[in-house]
Length: 198
Image 1 (cartoon, one colour):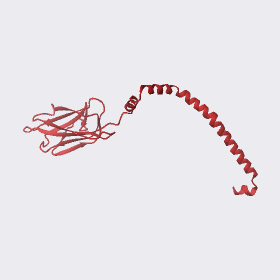
Image 2 (cartoon, rainbow, N blue to C red; image 1 turned 60 degrees about the vertical axis):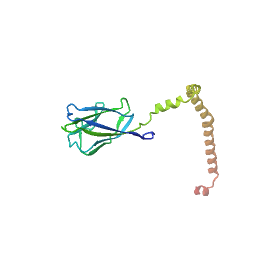
Image 3 (cartoon, rainbow, N blue to C red; image 1 turned 90 degrees about the vertical axis):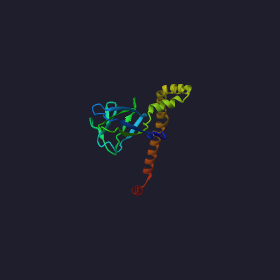
Image 4 (cartoon, rainbow, N blue to C red; image 1 turned 90 degrees about the horizontal axis):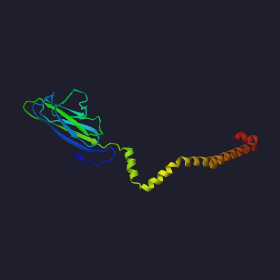
């Protein structure tokens, strides 16, 4: 397992699991193994078949009752010296953060191992959790004052609206009227030849 720097949406971890399937395990009674991963989103899931199984080994992956790989239910992933890569994101955002591997081995002589590699990205941060974390950093007394101020915010906004109407909107309207009158007066004072040039 390799662990990387943790920032929003960056790779959190790559997990590699060897799934050994002994001789004689059938499709009807497959071997099951649970894999616990970190909370996040599986961006890439590689299923690596080393040389040897010659089509006698099959695997699949479940998240709860939902079959993740292969995408079609009742199908098995079968391979020989090949890597299958599944790039449809699989969310592990609620517990349990577990996938179930299933496999069979119809070989009558050899056990076989299939390797699973999970690349997990950290989830986008929860905005509500971030806000709560930031609020916890503020001293209780400051939070109390902020709470009291917020209670009176609607009244203060109404006072500001009245102030804007009286102190800004009224004088501004009168100024516009004055400018319009001055402009009309200037226009009246122009001669016909000056008006023609406008």
